[in-house]
Image (cartoon, rainbow, N blue to C red):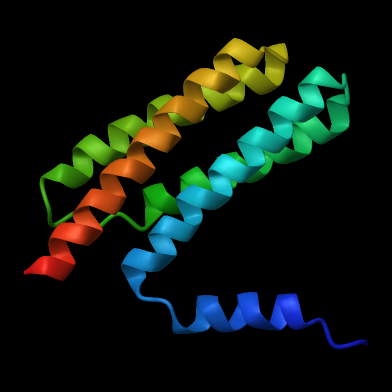
Length: 124
């Protein structure tokens, strides 16, 4: 198996990342897969739409199950994740770019909120 420097770097980045950084990576991954699904929708590549939306759904599920429920805000995050999951599911069934865009907007908003939380956490 040939050495893949990019894959090795990415693996190292994941292995050494903090929990907060891993969460940010998950948001970025969900955004990436939604963007790929949107591009596939434009090309009428239904299989790629399905594959990429399912990847985004799995990431959102991972964010849901790893919520630290001891904090009251976890319930708010969970509700947003449920909303996103619903939009992704409907977008996949209907192959609807507007529904996919609604999910994408929410994921970007959550990512931006998470970035703000990370900045505040580092300045304390």
